[in-house]
Length: 232
Image: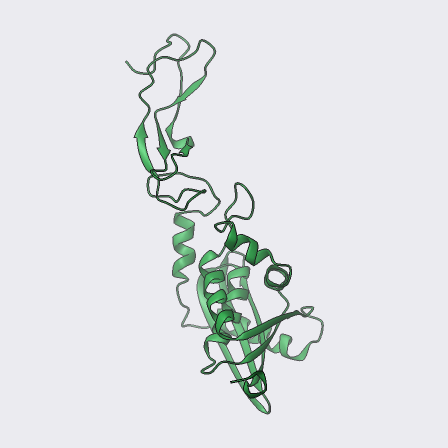
């Protein structure tokens, strides 16, 4: 199938949460020629950016055949991430935004990438609340969805709240920032401390693959002034 045979789909999407994080929803409009479909879904607890992403993903997931899709969104988070190459860099860098911080909403970015590998997707930013007909309608759909009775759970967001993805290693099983392998906990067997040392780490995390060591705040213990040993 060549490009001329693929249908051109216009996808308009908007999403939000009130407060942020809070109850959320998204609205989507799909246009193919004279055919128009509208969708909206609400969630109990989520974020603005997750709703913006879910709207685009949901719209793309409704397409049964490969298509050329023009996405219109007022989310600079999404449009800039794709058009400025940030998304590719995050993926290539093991989903790190920088040396220390993990990218947010990795689960949704991965879903979006899979859909972008199926369809020919381009993104265009539109200014929100500026009278853009489809954007205003998507905003209304999102608001109606978040005020509805059948709100869903954003399961992945709830998981992330319990296990923050800020790049910090906190416990055994967290993923090494260098090679994405689960770290393991090791006891710190050091018994002596330096005279001016104010604290020590009772244990640490280590990657079994690359041997990178991580020290956590949870393992940090203050040293009493009247002793130079770690353990009684």
